[in-house]
Length: 113
Length: 112
Image (cartoon, rainbow over all chains, first blue to last red; front, top):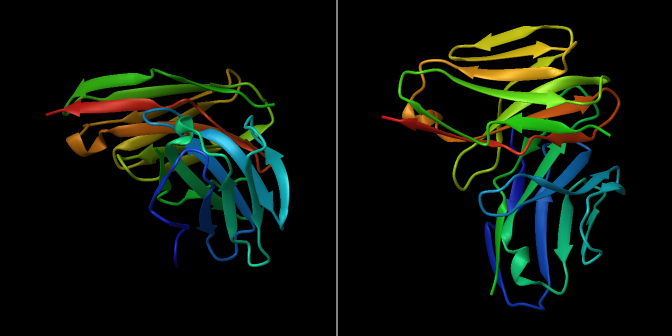
């Protein structure tokens, strides 16, 4: 069974540009979560999508947005990139059972120059 | 909402020694407590989890204990090896709630 896949692995953008990150969940998982992890720091919750809808949002500005497609894959968009957006962006998925953990992808390393 | 605190933030042990990482949570309705290991440049990987109906779970050198009364749970790694060096995250999740809260992480270094 394929795990959570994220693309691209690395992304370099210029300040002010837009970045699009993609995530495919484990087959059968309906929820997708996005986290930002700055270098050496913890997991900052960004967004949660389930059944195509945004269910919860972390403390991030509106230029961080995303969507979930009918096949449950998801994309994260970051507009008007700033240098401090440079981080590892992790996607995780889970099924409907609340007593199971998330499965994380390997992340997209976004570098803003 | 749930709040998870994790200690220590960094931990350095000698190879062969034991390592213990502790977490506390605030929501008494939380019933699922996973632990993740994140190696450099990779995403976090689930290494062990425990549900609220048990007090301890062991998997080879790794064990987790849960004290629901005190609302804390701990990760125990025995006979540590250099490959155990990583960042470890605890988390707590509430039944019927997909929102899982993570601790801030512990950077474990095992010195050979």
